[in-house]
Length: 332
Image 1 (tube, rainbow, N blue to C red):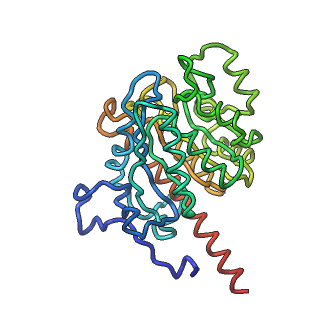
Image 2 (cartoon, rainbow, N blue to C red):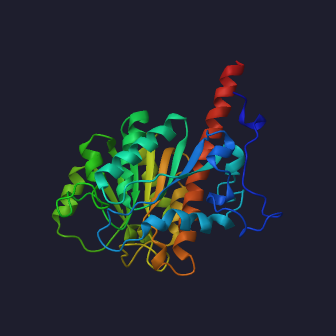
C-alpha cells in the first residue's frame, strides 16, 4: 500500500460549487460506501432503532437528523490541525435496518452488520438510535481487538440489570458488556453523569463492575483539560471505544433527547475533552440518543454532528499515522 501522502481519498462534495442544502444528506456530504468501492477506513453508519427506550422515543430518526446537521461541516478541523477526509477514506455506509418489534433479533442483526463492516478493515462511526445498539457493536469490536477500554459519556450509568424483565434496553448495555467479558475492566469510565438514581446501590454495583465516574460537576470544577488528562492515563494505549449519549450535554445544549437531565456539560466541554483524547487508540465510536422531535433549531443534531466529526478526525489521524509507519518500515 502506498503512503498516505501518495493516496487520494474521495472527500465531501465541493460546497463552493454545489450549495450545502442541495443533494443527498450523507454525513458531512461524504461519498456513499458504494461510491468508494465498498471499502472505507472509517464507515459512518446509522442505526435507526429506538425500541429499547424507557421514556421518550424518537432516536430512530437521530442518524438522519445528524446527517442533515452535518451539511455545514467543513474539510479542515483547526482544533486538531487535520483534514480528516484527506487523511483517510471516510464514507457513509447508510443504515443498518433492525427489527423494531423484536429487540433480541435487532441486537443480533446489528452485531452481524457490524461484523461485516469491521471485517473490511474499517472503523465504525455509528449514529444512533438508542443506547441499546452499543452492546452489539461492542461485541463486534471485541471480536477484532479483544476486550476494549470504554469511555461512556452519558447523564446515566446504563449499567442497570433489567427493565420490566428485559435484558436488552438502553439502560443495560454496559452491564451486559461487562458480564460478557468484552470490556477491559481496568479502563472503564463514565463521563458527564448526574441526576437522581434508584438508590445508592446503583453506584455500588457500578463500581464493582470497574467503572470510574467523572460527573458533569467534576467537569465544571476541574475543567476539560484536567479531565482529559485523567482519562488518557486511565486508558493508556489500550484499544478504546467511545460511546456518547447526547444527553451527557445539558438540555440547553441538547434538548432533543429521550431522557434529559438538568446540570449537564456544555457542547464546548464535550468537544474539548474529545480533542484531549486524540492520542488514544480509538478503534470505533458511537453518538446516540438524538431524538429530533424534541429538538429546536437543530441544536442537538448540530452538537451531535460536531461530536461525530471530532471522533472521525481522531480515527483518521491515527489511520494516517499507522500507514506512514507501515510505509517507513517497508522502505527499510
